[in-house]
Image 1 (cartoon, rainbow, N blue to C red):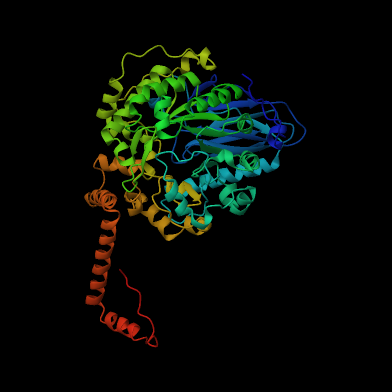
Image 2: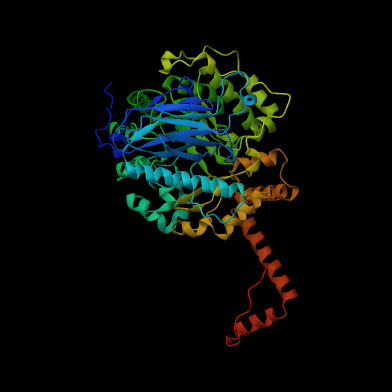
Amino acid sequence: MALPTAPARELSPHLATAEPVHFGAGFHDEESHGLDRFRWMSASGTLTFARAEEPRFLELWILSEFHDLSQTLTCSASDYTVEFPLVNGWAPVSLRLPARVDRVDLHASKLFPAAYHPADARVLAVRLRPPLLHRDPARHATVSGQHENWIANTREMLEGRTALDSTPVSLGIDLHGVCNVKPPCVYCEWDFSKELEGKFVEAPFTPDTLREWGPFFDKSVNLVNCSIGEPFMMKEFDDVLDAFGDGGKVLEMTTNGQILTDKNIQKLLGRPIDLYISLDAGTPQTYAKLRNDRFENVLHNLRRLITAKGGPGRYPHVHLVFMPMRVNVHELENFVKICAELRVDRMVLRPLNDSPGVNLKWDRAGYQYDYQKELLPFPELVQTSGRAQALCTQYGVELADQMDFGGKMDAQFSKWLDEGRSSIAVPAPAAPAAARSEPSVPPESTPQPIVIPLEPLPSLGRERKPACTEPWKSLYILRRGVMPCCYGGVPIAPMDQYKEAWNGPLAQAIRFELKEGRFHSYCIKSPACPIVRKSAEAHDLPASQRARMRLRRWKARADRMTGGAIGKTLFAVQWLLIRAKRVATDPRYIGHHVRRLLGDSSRGSLPPSRM
């Protein structure tokens, strides 16, 4: 089988001028966790490299375990010293090195508490990916601006500010609005989405789009493609990907994988992309019930892509997506086996959006697909999550569980999770490390069972954050409208009003409620949000909000059965009640409308209702 070769595109200046960097004293051996290759640093560490006669730039990707900016990293090179506050998770910093230096000394202000790794006796502070040493001042300025914005954004969130001076750290984008799967996937609201897109349905996405966005693009670090369409059908795809890579962005992109041709595979190789492939089936028969008969074609394309990129752990990262539904939940184990056989970087468990208003029905490959009947009850979803955890452990597959968005599944629903885990038979032998093309992990860094201490764990600052941080750090600029989060139910502004929406009244109101420990009504009306749904199932929501969620679900079901008549009736009743209250409380109201009927507008307009 002929494999696509690496693309012969011109390297960006920061890559063309890259020089080797070596980990010195203070760093532990390289290890991996999930998709990451990194080294733990103890309290201090040294990086070394060849001496040069001119200034250079050192780019570091650092993971801090602290959520409250309380951990800093001091970098010293000769007589030059700079201190960086660290945000939680992986984030970049860039250091300008003076001429004629050949080392940088790093020091963390605080350690990752030993209570979080009781089976690992090493001194641990932060993790570092392989550093990048280069001579591209534009790249240094870009990454420095991103770090400063991320720090400002985190500080504003911790302070509970609702009007932000920072711009989004994560940007939702809409790459392409045309798809090659026709008719669409059975769970895709294609027609509804295209109606929402309105005049923006054919709006182009090009490098000019990114320049128009200015700081909203320049200062973002993560890009998430949320388009209702297939990105590999874009005409200027290469130029856009170059702009992402040169700007230090990590792109999350979803594809159906059916047109991963040699040419398209070449476009991906070596680029910092998390590629999500929607498969959702463990057999060709079930795939045909969801899409079409190209199941084996997708698997063939993925084998070629993973071989061409050199196996797991290299860019682009390949994530295979499974959304459990009635039609496919019985194929979960077979799906995990496919992930293991393909050597994907990660399996993604993603819930089918619990949207009561969706009324999709298809007859596909002899199967009657009804969206609402495909939704699994919440306990079964959690059990499926537990099964997936056990199966991925059994077959040596990395799992990303998007049903645990917000991170409380294990604590809130341990019974159902344990039921799912225990339903899996005795584990089969895991795939050998050699077959997965992964370096062996040093014994000292081998994952150990979690030991739950008797005393409370030291604080990492997580308690200072709201239940959801999306409205602070993210904005989704989509053809169908601007969204404040990845699970937004309805747009808060048209696509071209994203700047106004970022600090608009609704965005600020959502942030205010979240910082006060409550969900805004926008959140309650966004049925796909797993944080809200988990809170409802755990009875953490106030009784009034639980009642509103139940009413919304009842109304949606009634609308489906009556063709929307219930919704129109409720709207009419609400309109009559508002007008009746206005008549009772405002004597001028009747007189105003009498004058309107008589065509007399000379007396001016009535003040607006405060309802």
